[in-house]
Length: 163
Ligand code: GDP
Ligand code: MG
Image 1 (cartoon, rainbow, N blue to C red):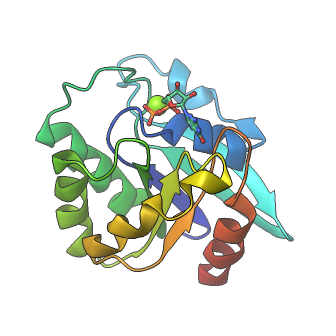
Image 2: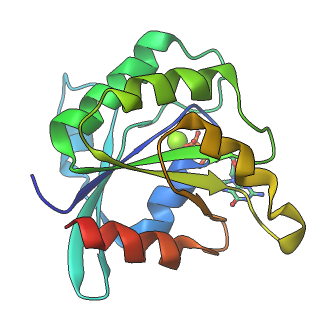
């Protein structure tokens, strides 16, 4: 288990968009296996000479905000079992939610390096919105915009230090 980054977080925060930003290729094999729930997607990427894998633990679950605590638990379980670095994505446009708190509570008990990606910081007017996420007690908060790639380089610079 090395150089594996798992992306966790509640629906609609931008996990899949960030996954696409961090990866160049996807492993379709897992998706094709019959009888296997499509609950995770794997991809590969490279940053400053480090090869890594990324797992989108949100899989194909799309759109709904009716996510259960059990699904959040499952995401964290996958991350703990398969990855050595966890990226916890939150959304500055909605701010901190109860579900974010639940994810954070689980992650605080996990013996893995966690990076908080405060997503949707699309422009300078949104800088500062992410400060509330420091209260989650998981360490550094990285302002990113998955749609345009802003801030993802700084995040990756620190992630590869864990490899
Ligand atoms: P997931 O459910 O966590 O996988 O979230 P998605 O990646 O599917 O994104 C949910 C929505 O947020 C989509 O409409 C994305 O286009 C949007 N989104 C993702 N990243 C950003 C971002 O950096 N800025 C903005 N404004 N929207 C974003
Ligand atoms: Mg998704």
